[in-house]
Length: 104
Image (tube, rainbow, N blue to C red; front, top):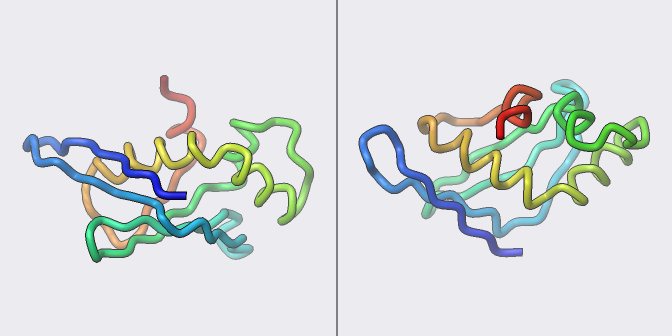
């Protein structure tokens, strides 16, 4: 799935992140699903917490398989939120938490 999300930073500079790689994995240490985004040739890791996934899908099955399934079902929403978090400023990795999904 190729998706391009564009946002402007505080200086009006267009910041685009895309998610051409559908791979995702569960990171037990962080209790999060990890996925990757790309800004031109720069790769960044994104982590969506288990609590955030429960926020967007309250009836998810417990455990790794349930979290990965919740990610897959809500992929478009997660990518949109990831683009918003990415637009706040460039870092090595980005954590998506409950507060990020609570905003309109």
